[in-house]
Image (cartoon, rainbow, N blue to C red; front, side):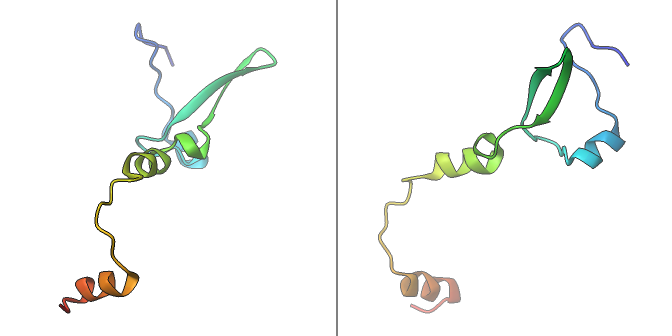
Length: 76
C-alpha cells in the first residue's frame, strides 16, 4: 500500500468494518511510541455534533409539545 502524493491512503475494508469507520467518519491521527494511530474523532467533532451545533438556536416558533403533536397528526 502506498501513500499518494496528496497524502492519501486506502484503509482496507476489513479494517474499516472492524473499526466502524463509515463514509464521512471524522478521524484523528496521533503518534504513539513511534507509530501512527488512527481513531474515530471525539463525539463532539462527529457529524451529529456538528449538525446539532449548526441547528442550535435556529427554531423561531415557540410551540408546546401538544401543539407540535397536533401538527404531526394533522389536527388543527
